[in-house]
Length: 469
Image 1: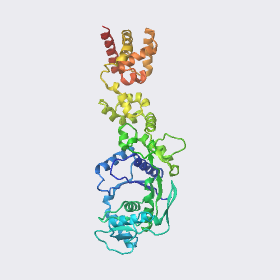
Image 2: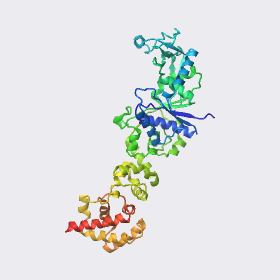
Image 3: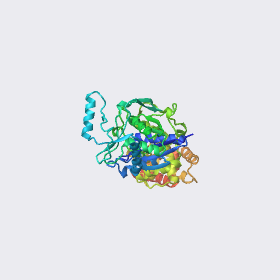
Image 4: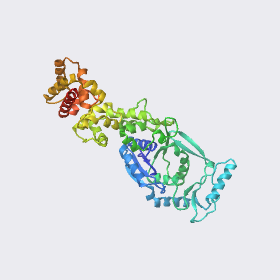
């Protein structure tokens, strides 16, 4: 059985966006599922718009998404000699020819064709002239004048193109630079690409590429054109929909596994299942389950799915991903047991890593004072000072602050004061966090640790006594 070889060929003229990332993912998944090869190719022949910064941004995004490649990265600008070799093959076989028509002449031909009710196309004026190479000549492919070219698309089904509507398209410009459709075919042939999964904005390029494959006597790859990604208003995804660089979603606190899970579901399905681990995606992905309708990118759904992935990820795995967000907040945080304890109290209630870091502020403050004014007035009252002091005494006698041992301390305080748990827990929560909102009181105390808990309880007693005076 032939080894599956797929590729992802971004142009380095900007960041890696959502649509491009989904194309990369589909190719990566198909290669991984079939124990195939995934090739990364940088299509940088547009030297005016291509930048090294964009190349670096693409690599950064691919690495964050953990879409590792088996071959490459290849750069088209480093393959010009190969393209010239294949251009000569077309010229030698009579499938291409030199053309000296000016841009103005070609435009006049197109206008004339449209005026006569036809497609705007080059009229083949130089097709049989046998012109030699010259400084002002382009190289055109000699398209067939009759018949059809059929794109056998594994997603869309067969798409038939009339050859009479194809013109003799340029494969090399007069300055010697080859054109997109030509170099793509040469790259795919020379790299052994046998499966091309790409956006359906490339459908119109495919018949031209098929003609080139045939002229170069090379077998056709399997083609599959995936539908576009749209915004919630069903228009093409743009920045106003929140379409940003893939790494912007990383910086907003999304997990890479959640992001690829969401991307995979933009156009692909496996029954009613929504949540997939990376391994499940590799096992279950198939081209036949890619739909023909456009995917709709919904940030709210992505965020909800991200929350599910955060909950499903172990604390130890979350810690190194969350750490940069904690440090961005100015917390003196390290990937240690304390961070793991903090995350353990927050990961079931955080939708993003940014939200998690926001919720961790009281864990890393030396002093939670000043307390929230309303919370202090309601719960840090003179009659609670003794309760907090008694709890500090009871907790101070414990060897550890595990939940089970804490329960005994709280039980003794409840017995001695006659207060219910709620009457004790809220003043304790304010004393430990400065607010009335926090994780559960037992997990909060265990995560903070004995030293911090005792210091904050005693500080709250001092605050009550000082305000009471």
